[in-house]
Length: 197
Image (cartoon, rainbow, N blue to C red; front, side, top):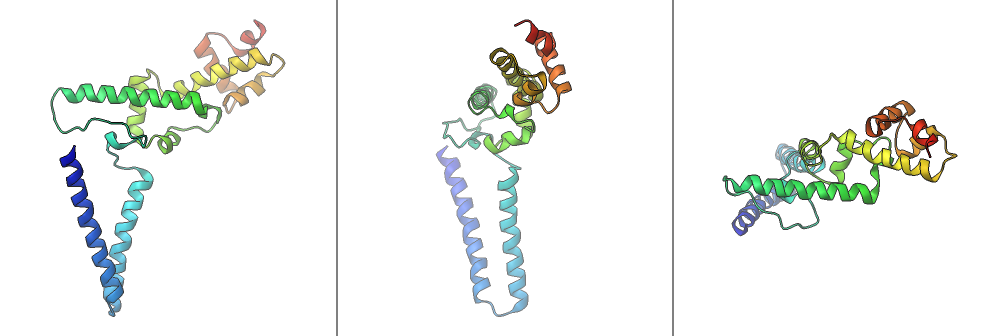
């Protein structure tokens, strides 16, 4: 790990030195053409890094969370990588699950997988795999499971609330989607569940 950090530090320092060199040229040049070329190169470099940071196109999995987990590095290409990857995936899944229970993002009817990337800066494809493999269901089914539990809690606590109101407050954008998801999850429709209480 120390060698990895040292190598990364060297590369970063080289990039910074080159950028400062371009800035010096920019400050000291009197030639308009040189100024334009230098400014163009600097803008491309800065926009490139900004784009990478903003859209998280390449994120090293081990450094994704900001919570400072002591995660293993993938330096070896042996059987241990599979075990480390499984442990890592399980930890990510636990963190996602804890965030869902704590923050209740499922109550927003426009929640998307890309919204999770703002909280968990890992790639969309990895997040999708995380739901399918570690949590055993698709993202939409996972979200709907939380919404259904919330709707059941609301129907139990507020028997006078309408099905439409329960659906909206549970995070569903339409009552038909709510009915389908409720039946898929519980085997019964919302009105039957509500009347059985």
